[in-house]
Amino acid sequence: MSIHPLPIFERDADPAFREGADDAAAYARLKPPSSIVVRAGVTRWIAEYPYDGNAKPGCGSKLVARTHRGTELVEMLTTTCSNSGCGKSVSRQEMLEYIEQSGGKDFPFHNEGQILRVATPEDLSQWTSVQAEAATIAPTAKRLLMESGLPMKFVQAELILGREVLTIYFLSEERVDFRELLKTLAATFAMRIELRQVGARDEARLVADYEKCGQHCCCRNFLKVLKPISMKQAKLQKATLDPMKISGRCGRLMCCLRYEDETYETLSKRMPKVKARVQTPDGPGTVLESRTLVQLALVRLDQGQDHAYPVEDLQVLPPGGSHAGPPRTT
Image 1 (cartoon, rainbow, N blue to C red):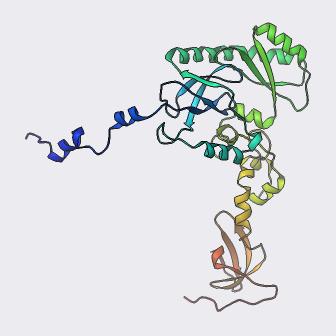
Image 2: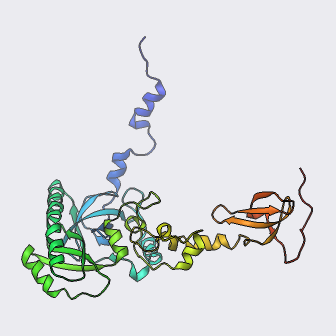
Image 3: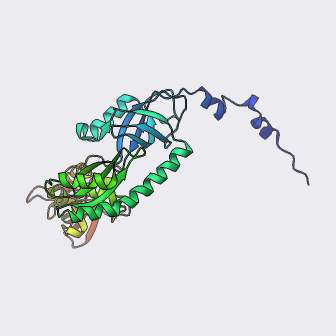
């Protein structure tokens, strides 16, 4: 039996009957962005650079940019031009508000540079070669740091696309006079060397992968400003203070304890304290345990049964007070 196309499908396939323009026509009407927000470097710093080309790159495109370090391969995040891009553009005010909320002046943001072009196949091939060269540099750099006798632990070597600078990240808990080592490294690799000291949290940002929660480490994934975390925040959120359970890949208190602290503090204020007398729908009782995130409290009723109740169903009784109403009957 032959197949006959339905008229409605033939009509939809005819451009003359389509509402609005197709994707190609819509893309042709877009204007090239005047500035582009990009991410670059092994520390994934953020920058906004002007762009005067004719191409209309989309989110995730690889670009070649002149940055404060030299010529680099960067990744496009979005544009700040409202009439271009893929509909995910942000206004400049929105971007500045994000920066302010993410650490303000401590946020690793740059704007001194220029987007040169959309990366070509030759640029991508050169970048592969640069990454391979950095991998061969790393063992030698690690050996030279060890032979220097300085209290320095090699973390990572980063070489940018234009090979203008080789950045060597090292871990140290104290200030280090590495002037002689810098001369040795420059003579060995015949290029400008930048030694950058990092702490334990920044080391995790550079080399860590997954945390015990099964997600990428927050410091590597999205956190830009790594602020200190207090034991008070850990006590509020965790039932145990076992260092193995509250410490992250860096050996310090987990970063998520800080940015989840406000939520926990708000939710914990609603929870009755352990051993508090409360009125439940089934009568008065005493709180045995509480679960902040799910907003449930385990209550031992005066009749002897243990039940879990949402915090909305509980009323804290004054000391020595009786229940606020008759128990619920079933």
